[in-house]
Length: 269
Ligand SMILES: *Cc1c(COP(=O)(O)O)cnc(C)c1O
Image (tube, rainbow, N blue to C red):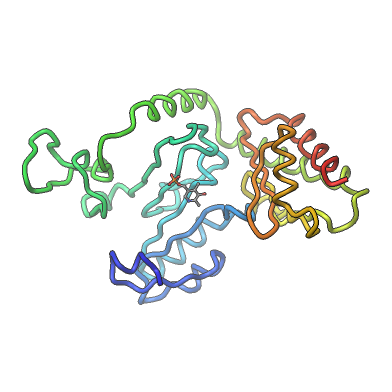
C-alpha cells in the first residue's frame, strides 16, 4: 500500500499529526509531520512533538512547506533531526524553485541520502565508479541544480535582508484575523454556514493561510474558486469543499485581504 515501505522495509503508519508524539514508541524509527496542514492551515506543535518523538527514541522529519517564510520555526532551538520544504510558497521562489533539506549538524556524518547523485559526491569531477558522499549537508544534493530557478530564489531571498521573522508572523496573524472578520461581515447576508473557517482561531494553532469550507452543492467550492480567480483573487480549491487563501505577509496587504473577502461575498451572492 505504501511506497515508502519499499525503500526502508519499515511499516508506514498514518497517525493524525496531533497524536504523533503519543503514538511514537520503541518500534518507531522516524515520524514525518507537516508543520502546517496544507488543507486546514492548522499549525502543529513542533517543540512538543519533537520532544515526545525523541523521548520515544525516534527521529522526526518536519515538512516545512507551509511554514518556512511564514513563521518562526526554530530547528536548532528544538533539536529537530531532519526537515524538508519547498521555496515557492512563503519564500516566494517562483514556479519550479528548488526544495531544501535540513540535517541536524551532529547527524550529518551519518546521513545516507536515498537519492545520491554526482553533486553529492565528495569529488564530483573525479568521475570515479564508486560513490563517496561529500562531507556535511552537501551530501543531500542530487544532480545538476537548475541554475535559473536558483537565481530566481536568490533574488527572492534578498528581499528578506533585514526582515525579522517575528514581525512577519505578527503581520501574518493580523492579516488572517482581519480576513476572517471581513469574511464574517461580508458574507453574513448569504446565509449562515455557507462559508465556515476551518483554520483554527487560536494563533498558536494557525499557519499563514485561511481555509474556508464552502457548502452548497449547486455552486460548489471549485466553481466559487474559479470565479474568484477570474476576478483576480487567486486562492485554490481542495476537495471536497475547501477554499484556501494563502497570505504571504511580505507583500500581501490588508487591502488585499479586504478585497478578497468582498469579492468572495459578491461571488456567493
Ligand atoms: C507544496 C508542498 C510540497 C511540494 O514540494 P515540492 O518541492 O514541490 O516537491 C510538499 N509537501 C507539502 C506539504 C507541500 O505543501
